[in-house]
Length: 141
Image (cartoon, rainbow, N blue to C red; front, side):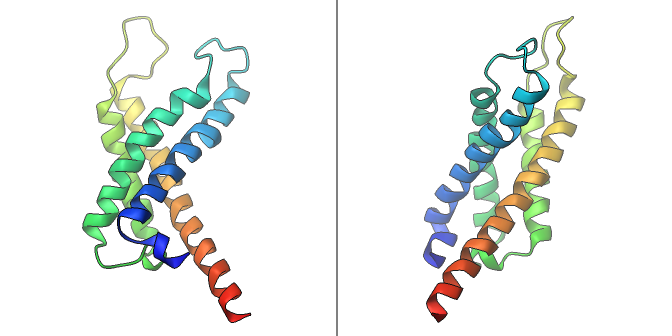
């Protein structure tokens, strides 16, 4: 499994993780918060889209900044840092809604996306370590 934690294959896996994390994780939480669908009806699919875009940005940052290093060897601080940068980019990509909408605006969206990016980045780093630890313990057996 360690081969999956580097290069293009690792970037594809990381993007899939972000889509699942944003769609099911953050989208699932929002389904509980907004169970009546007053703000948005289908949160899982709505948040999977920024998860896909964020996964691509995050993977590109990891491939460029941490080149030559397997994802399981990258410090968790770097995962959080690249997650924050990804969140800032996602927040800046949002378009302010019309007047009277419940959207928090570009500053609020950037803050929310940055916090979610840090959480997703840390989750990605922890996932890489757990998968590598699991494959290493199986190799010892």
